Length: 260
Image 1 (cartoon, rainbow, N blue to C red):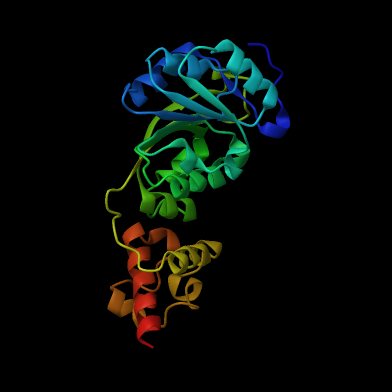
Image 2: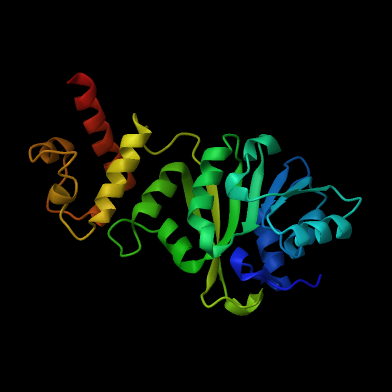
């Protein structure tokens, strides 16, 4: 499929057949599990998924690609939706779905949260992303990669980095390495958060000032004496706290405000 990549859409088309086979094997598509593909592009991964006889829906913003995909896969179990995925109501695509995609780097982070919040019946996700983003998603506490994205993604998903992908696997080659990540929603989150908005606000404040000690970075939420009750050293930095620590701190603040 001939198509000139458009910079405004962040298009880098996956073209390496070996990488595609490895990705499809990792997904392990099944006929009884519908799949949503985000950004199918020229349809290389689309073809490999349809070869496994799955029911596939694709969301693509580029109208020219939509037309080409509909023509190429006419008569197959593919439905193409021409839409900006960030504005698309994913719930209209059904429940108990799986999501895959080579995500545009320029919208990857907001897109991850859009999927997490927009598909309550989500089974799993397999995404190709910038390697740096995947490393941050999967990062452990007390590492330089651990940050706000790590906490917010790991509260929703079990994160598994699968493999790296070099620039030459794409047309045109991006200037960075890529990686494939598997995200599986928690049946129950590591810690139940009582006020999601407060939790998100606390985590955002913490990593806005990540080089400060938590007693200073979170002074708008917690008092000096609160750290002992939480069993946390106030001299730690935000990157030293675990996802569970952040959830416990947010719940502590929620409980005090509720009982005030």
